[in-house]
Image 1 (cartoon, rainbow, N blue to C red):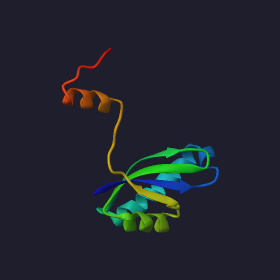
Image 2: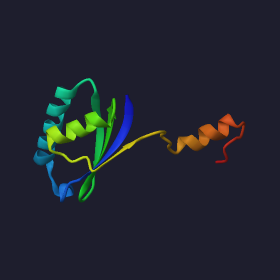
Image 3: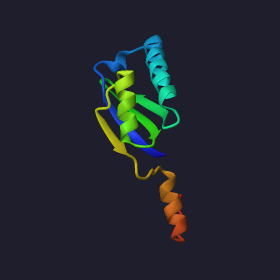
Length: 102
């Protein structure tokens, strides 16, 4: 499966509290169960008026189907090609035979 980030424009989503977020996650899980094994939800980041969701999926079509069935818009879908983090610098330096400076 490929990894995607889905940007969802949802006005005032950042103001939702515990029970509302639980209900939203439950609805998403319900739809994911219908579409299984072609899609998996990893995590989501909630901002003021957007969520940024990380999914594993066979293709964009199944993500769009999830959005349609769940009612959560998939405003922008981007396939993730590579992932880097702070340790990438260390791994690159070590691979090139360089020592890191502390």
